Image (cartoon, rainbow, N blue to C red; front, side, top):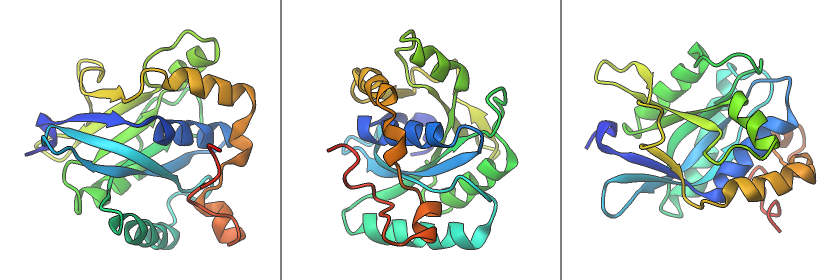
Length: 204
């Protein structure tokens, strides 16, 4: 089954983790890895968790390769896979999926052909801060038959959804309390290995 047949559903904690990572580094491009599995019914990619990667020097391959190996080892033991990639552009007015994001997405597709890219939608994020946005503040990109990344049409809503409808309400509370300060990504971990990239205490 190709990605053309699948829906994509993101769990609340994974979704919140990715947005908070972006908010912690508002003037930088940030990225992350999507963790999950294909549903037992084979019609949905369930994004159950996410790992914040970097907020500087995103194109550097050695760090990316190291992080992907560690992530794959940890989650495969739990029966989960790397199922996609998250990217937030450096400029809030940049709504394009750039070459770096596409290249990392292509790399993940070699191991999980139905992989998706989620791109942060800064316009929707601003709406969320004003309590006007109910849908996911991300856009879904999938590879077409020619292996080009395309925005899921018509607007992605029918293919991509939040598992918990209340996710944005919870996220808004975390934004109000500046919870993003507690997020640890791989950059932080490489600087100080005592910082846990799994963020085990984030939602306590």
